[in-house]
Structure formats: structure tokens, C-alpha cells
Image 1 (spheres, rainbow, N blue to C red):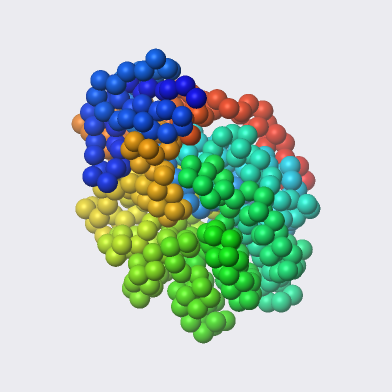
Image 2: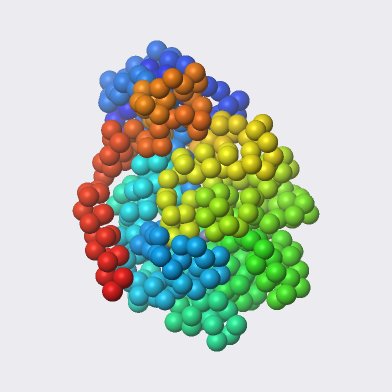
Length: 444
Ligand SMILES: [Zn+2]
């Protein structure tokens, strides 16, 4: 692969170990990796003049349900609490098939890319009408984003006291077999991997204790990560206490769901002991501030988590509970929400951006991503700070205070995915048209 040189950036926020920021600096990419960051670099390859721009690592999204981009702003779910919201949407999702899964994933990932995201996870926990994890993996590969899909699952339907309708749940033996299939087919453990698969039963209230434990055993056997929803809101805590006789943290620990290879979404209601547990075990958290606001779940104790050394990344969560998929906007929301709870000095723009980049990469066990350092993967976001959003800013590098929410250029593994604010790898207008056609069909 030819070299790429980003020349004369107003600022490069490296997110390296010293959190160094370079002014008037250059960045050289060679063979999909960052080769040099510094001043006065030259190259015979492709050169981009990035004067008037701030360069950051690509953002990392640690929690999503990409299929939900087909059910944004569904009227009956707009103002419902979590459980009621799910019960509104389950019957709609039960009509999805492979085409819906591919198209919604493509739209969701393209939206993320335009907001500076280079690496996204996804949590797909329902497989109606022949849908497979493969459908979303194909969408990510076609777009060119680095992808960590997780094979989710639901096994306890309404007739067994669960929340989802029986038609959307699977037999646990089938779930485990398909988990093995997708890990064997798609998981790449090597450095620089473009696809890594995780295992992700949907939540403690939609699968059995046995499946939680079996998935943990299988993940350790295969060397893949574990992911689920945990301690999302008060209803969730009450369910855990009444059904399992303990708090979610204890339930997770008993079933093998803590450790450096585990990350949990939300964790809004973690108490002090659970934060200690996550810190001690290096268990990660996907913080989803917009979704938590949208569903009225509360404010996650991110300040306390970070102060205790818990690994925290950001997630936009499914579009049906956000309903946007803009990761840069999510980072700003994370910063603002900690200030609502803890005061104006609780989180800086730079710390929130760190959580969105390096923090997320660490949650997904990707030390090869999320920082602009020689030898790391060339996952890079270029932000144009010459536009109206930054006009008058005394500190354009404080992107989350006053800056663009749409990226100018985006590179993944050195390949350009966004060029001049437009997706360069797929025909996005056609994909949007297909998405809207499918959404209209679902509305019947
Ligand atoms: Zn979620």
C-alpha cells in the first residue's frame, strides 16, 4: 500500500501515553499503520493538506444494535420506559430478515463513520426469518469499518416468564452452536484484525443462568470477548433482586461475567461495591449517555468509575433508543452529563474525547487502535475546524466544546472511508433509499 501523509494539521491529538498534542504537525501512514507523527515529514505517496484541521484517533463505538436503525422514532415507543419500549418493538423486529439486517447495519455504520468512528462493535441478539450475524459482517466489510460483532441471544420468551415474544427466542443449544460457527468463521485474533467476534446473550432477563455460564465458558475456550447489558435502570435492579436474589454485579461475578475479556453496556446503576469489582477485575463498561437520557434510565457514575480505574468506552446504543448514531455527539453528551451530576469540573472535553477513542479501544482490548503512535493502526479522523462550528474558538482542539460533528476525512487501516465529508466506499444515497423502502414496508 502506498504512503499517505497528512500535512500541516493545526493540531494532532495523539492520545499517546503522555496524551501529547502537536501543533502544525504531520502524520505519515505506511501499509495501514502509523509510521511517524511529527514535524516536517515528507512522502512521495498521497499527500493531504490538512491545514485548518484537527486530527484525532478514530472514535470507537462499544455498544450498538445496528438493526434498530430501521425502527427509529417509532411513535408508540417514543415515550415509553425500557421494558414497555421493548414490548412495542419486538413484534416489528420479528418481521426482519437478512436484507433488513444488512441494510440497517450499512446505514448505522455509515452514520458512525461520518461522525468519526473507525471501529464499532455490534450486539445482534435476534435472528428472525433466516437472519445471521454474517449479514452485518458483510455490511461492515463492504463499507470498510473495523468491526467487532457479537453473537447475541434471547432464550426466555413470554411463556417462560421472559420479556420477548416466543417467536423471537431461540433454543439454547442452537444458540451455542451458532456462536461456535461464527467465531470459527469470522474471528481474527491477530493484531490489526478487521473483524473480531464476541459472545453476547442479550441481558440477564432474556436468557437463562445456564446460557450465561455456558457462553462464558465458550468465550474462554475460544479466546473471544463477552458482552451484555447490565444494571441499566431501576427496573433492571429490581428484576435482578427479585429473580436472582442479588444485585447485577454479583450475578455477573457468579456466572464468570467479570474480567478483562468482558464489557457490559450501560451500568447506570452500579453501586460502589460493583465499581470496585469492575476495577479489580478489569471489566469494561460501554457508557451510552444519549440512550440513558432517551429512556430516562439515569446518569451512569462514569466519574467514579474512571477515578477507580474502570475501563470506560462510549456507545451510541441502538438507534431505536437514541435515536441518532452520531458518536461525536455522544462524546459531548457524556461530558455534559457528568457535569450535571458532579459539577463543571467533572469532565473536560479532552477527557471525554479520550474515552471516545483510546478508552473504547481499551474496552475492546484493542491496544493497537485508539491512539496515534508509530506502529499503531492507521485509524484516523480529520476534523475541519475552519467552519462555522469552530469560528471564534480560542481552542479549536477542544472539539467537544465547539467543533464539527461530521468528520472531513476518515481512514481505517490506512484506507479512506470518508472523503470531504462524504462516504467514499459505498453508494450512500442508494443505501438510504433502500433503508427507507424497507422501513415503509415494515410500517405496512
Ligand atoms: Zn443496548
